[in-house]
Length: 112
Image 1 (cartoon, rainbow, N blue to C red):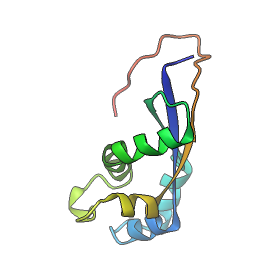
Image 2 (image 1 turned 180 degrees about the vertical axis):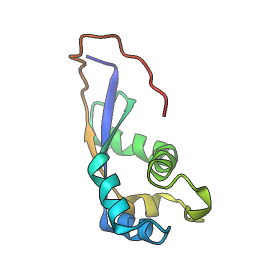
Image 3 (image 1 turned 45 degrees about the vertical axis):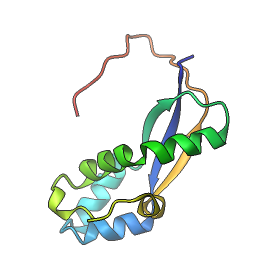
């Protein structure tokens, strides 16, 4: 088992509403949605769901930036205020306390 927990980030309708205001067409959004509807982020190991909530609140800005960059790389379209309240309106967060690696190859970091 890895010494990590994980969060699975999903997208709320409000996020897609914002994305439409950035000039993305409905077809573009649907293509992106099918390709990356949810993303998994490894976080420090947590033993209780309350710990996961605390870690997410601490790391939300990094997750927020990664999500925005993945969907709309042009930062001029990003919201002026990307606070925790907006994060919780735009994204769902499902915590996973234990993470195990059953892959047979060495874990390697890939480029963005």
